[in-house]
Structure formats: C-alpha cells, structure tokens
Image (cartoon, rainbow, N blue to C red; front, side, top):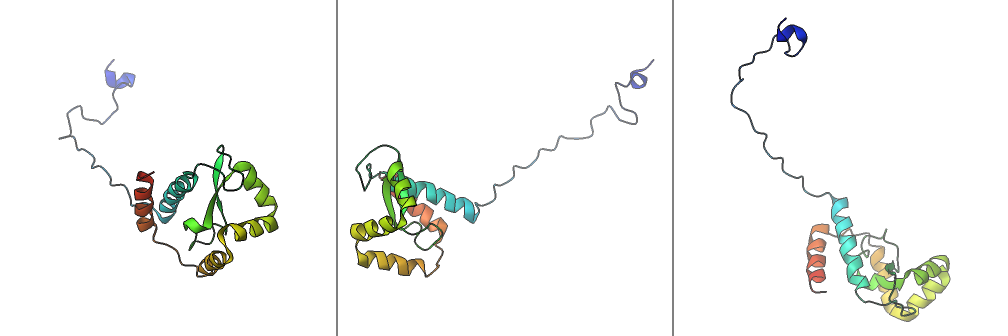
Length: 144
C-alpha cells in the first residue's frame, strides 16, 4: 500500500518545491484614528492635571482624578487647563451629586470672568487638531 492510499499524501499534489518561497511584505500600520488620538490626549492631560499632587478642595493626596468644570463633550475646552481641576475621588463624587454646590465652588475658585470665558469658548464647538495637541501634551508630560 502506498503512502498516498493511506492518506499521508494528498492526491494530485507534487512533492517538488513550487519555486522560491515568497515572503509577505510587512504591512504598514494605518495612521491613528481621531478617536485614538483623542484617547492618547485624554490620558496625557489627566497626568498633567493630577501632577498637581493634591485635591483642590480638601488637600488629600490619594485617589486623585481630573474633574472637568464643563463637560468633556464640549470639545473646544476639553483639554483646556482652566476647565479642569484636580480632585480626589470623594470630592469628585460629592460634586457630581451636588451640581449647584459645584457651580458655586468653581465660580469662587476660578472667578466669574474665567468661568464665563470658558462657557463662551465651549459654545464655539471648535474641535482641536488632536495631532498638534498630542505633540504639545507629550512635551508637557516630559517636563513633569
């Protein structure tokens, strides 16, 4: 009985090499999407804000978070340092559930002029160039 009959060799195949082995070309990575760039900017900006090292409200140094004065959905001011504060998790949760107190505290902290400037800028709905922003934030993180 031959090897072919036993099923070790497929029928109608040649045992001779079919020519030189072709190597696959390395595929280039596609450029990062807008969402990927924004996510990288988000991570770096969070590091910059938390580098303050203490909560702006109570002074604690544990479980620090970046809190936005106006929602991150306002892309024009999402990465504006004036729109972010460093809070510990307890203060962040407190202010999340007490928005009136948050607004009063923020206005006292940053001043009415800055508060209304941020508010006006938020309403422009201008989306930043995330590539430029990523380069700027990377440079700032390097100096921390």
